[in-house]
Image (cartoon, rainbow, N blue to C red; front, side, top):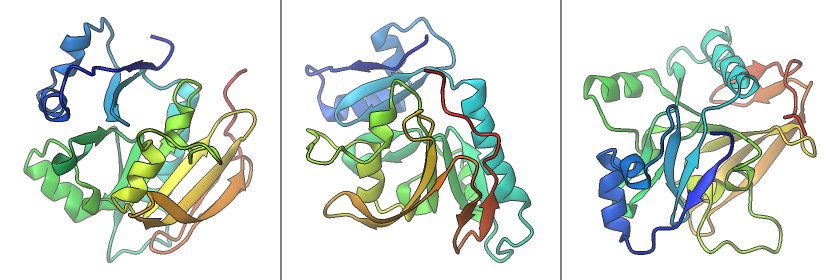
Length: 222
């Protein structure tokens, strides 16, 4: 599977689709003969993405390593990153699987001990997404002047008030990382951002106080 697939299933209600997603039945419904895929409910659609490339995964490893080894981190609230975890909001019937989530160590431990299906937005301090050619529009802010019929990931994360969203945009036209913060629930938008070009050192502010080197990061091949 080399590209992202989007399915519109208008004959299924949001609640039915949500229940199927929780039970892990959406893949069977779509009859997808693939392993290592990611299935999400975004903007009223089922979005199926392939496993990440090596370069994509390497960026996530760099971010995870920086967060877990930084000597200046707040030891009172140790932040831990974890990859490919269900982020869900049951009351809204919506789901997403961020590339990476960052949360307090005790929160992750409690969720693991409870064998939780996923994490709720209020348990997460930061989400991280790395763009791919087939789904970059889901990860970025909506293009200026363009109104989406349904919120994309960027808008959803703001709507559920996840405090920080780190977006690594590997498009050759962008090649930069942006940290979004101050989410506004009513507009589904982040009100502040700070960006770093590939090659520059990312400076995550408090409560993380972490530096992330990006010298090895490269745009995807055209």
